[in-house]
Length: 143
Image 1 (spheres, rainbow, N blue to C red):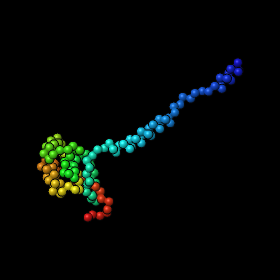
Image 2: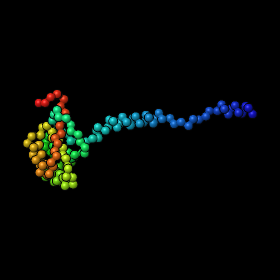
Image 3: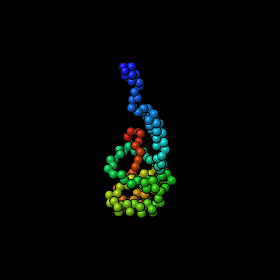
Image 4: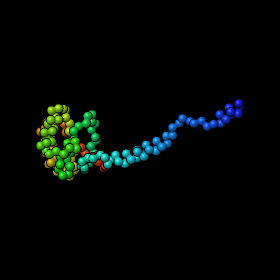
């Protein structure tokens, strides 16, 4: 009888553990794939903003963005519109939200007169708070 008892102890017992190494490998590969492809998935409007030394202003809510590319095309939050449609859309938005704020992003190649005209159109649509978006300057000081 003791012989059978000793044989029972010498058997291997299976541990109920999960090998997570393959799971970690798969997760790391997926992480690398997403890190590489994520910047390619964001599609935006190519605008070369002018540089300034002004500090960024704090934003509590996300304002609407009007963009003018170097060819003079207008966009409202990445949607291409002509001047008339832009003004009409902004008027509707202003009726829904009386505190509507708009950021104007214009390529540095866009003539000043065009930017001033778009700002006048925004004012005509009832937009009182307009911010100009620029890129931080790498040099110290102004001018």
